[in-house]
Length: 138
Image (cartoon, rainbow, N blue to C red; front, side):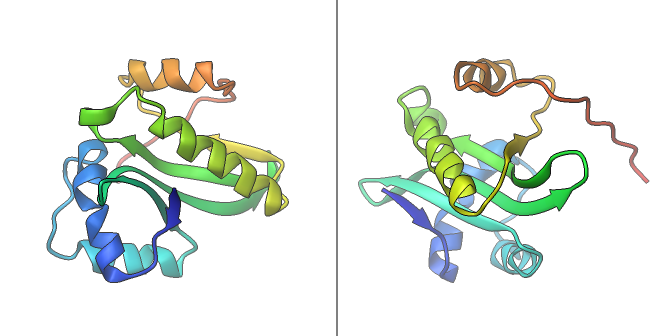
């Protein structure tokens, strides 16, 4: 069952799974960072199995000229131990439904160019490449 993550404990329960996607994450300050992100519109959802978080998605609802109102997925990860067993699809389907409820026209995400397995998953789930995303570290 998909859960909207709200409490500090629920946030911390997501740490290990999120760390698989974002290896630089540190436990110290993690809840504070997420709370700060929450103040900017970020939200987490999770899927659990046997009381362990096995899949996590972080998202925001935003608007811009290019896409209108959109649900932007910042983080989407399933624990390696249960990857390719449908849990990522559960979260993706949930987010699509949630986006529709929130009046979004688009579900949007970025994915690192090296994440070939993730790209296959996105293509299988009818996402398409819309643009290039450029970055300049400053």
